[in-house]
Amino acid sequence: MNKAKYITDVPKDREEAIGVIESKRPKIIFVLGDIDTGKSTLITYLANKLIETFKIGIIDADIGQKGILPPTTISLTFPRDKFTSFSELKAEKSYFIGSTTPNQFFGEMVAGLKRLVDLSTQRADIILVDLTGYVHGQGAELKRLKIETVKPDLILALQRRNELENILKPFKNKIEIINLEVSKDAKIHEPSERRRIRREKWKAYFQNSKTYRLSLNDYIISGTQLFQGRELTKEELEMLGNLFKWLVFYGEKMGEKYIAVKADLEHYSRQIDKRVLHYIDFEKLSNLLVGLIDEDGFCIGVGILKLINFREKWIEVLAPLSEEEMKKVREIRFGRIRVREDGEELGLIDRGAI
Ligand SMILES: Nc1ncnc2c1ncn2[C@@H]1O[C@H](COP(=O)(O)OP(=O)(O)OP(=O)(O)O)[C@@H](O)[C@H]1O
Image (cartoon, rainbow, N blue to C red; front, side):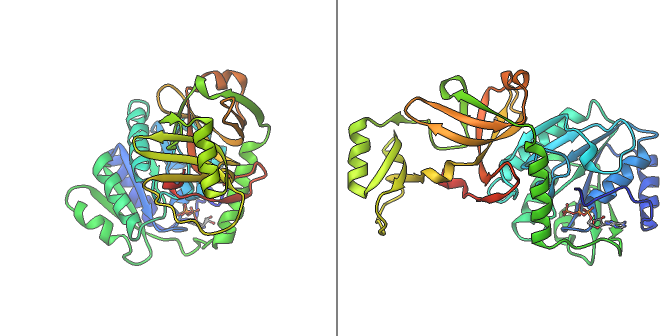
């Protein structure tokens, strides 16, 4: 299921990197590289070599191709023994991002990484951090923010040519950087192949899931503009429905702004000032991914929103969590991807849309 495996036939410079790590003992190591440059393969290699001498922590922050389940989170784990692939590792703590791309989630990506790094430093000698392959444009900004916030002791830069120079430039002479060549065997995976791998991961994750009916009043609801304002009356809902030819399931007023969850009764183009009225298509909420969050803000697991009953204020969520684990959930955080339990991704949603 995972692309990256423990491979011992690696470029020579890996041995040199191990030499530097053994002698200088950097605590936090970032692995940077474009997609498919072998970041996870490198971390698997280093962890297997170093685990004989050091306590190792791994943070999988590569949400595009997460090896450690669940997808759309970033995860911390402490492997005890040698392993061949990230998929064998069980997350000790995860932080919910809610999307398979860091676009629009820079805050979560940085805050989550920082929180996991803070947790790991007491329990491991060396923490290997796998970052996304998003290294151009805004991706470079995100890398800078992470480096500035976490201040790694060592950056391992997997470069084909000099595509990371832009990111690394401000940190030269401040942070130790080792350039590593990309293995000639590193294999490019087309977007369709990456999607297929993600489908398998989702499917594996949601195996043995159960549907839980959860009362909205029992949880903090976050990650959405909903449930923050005054609920609209029946008359107000009808008024909006008549005005725009909608079936309005639910609505709120927050300050001077209205929010409506609706389905179109007629198809025509409506002129609506979104600053005054924000509308959410009801179908955007079906099969929406939600994070099940504990009292410390960490993600116990993710679930799929299957039903939402606005009148009676409950939702049904499909999740592979036990009753015991569900008892620890304090918060339900809305994500921005719709996905089915068979692994089919139904699409990403704009952050502002819900
Ligand atoms: N040293 C190597 N020898 C043989 N194959 C390798 C080596 N390094 C990487 N590969 C192969 O190249 C592919 C990409 O590697 P990997 O998944 O580690 O990259 P990545 O940078 O972590 O990718 P992503 O951006 O998706 O996280 C995989 O199929 C992997 O098995």
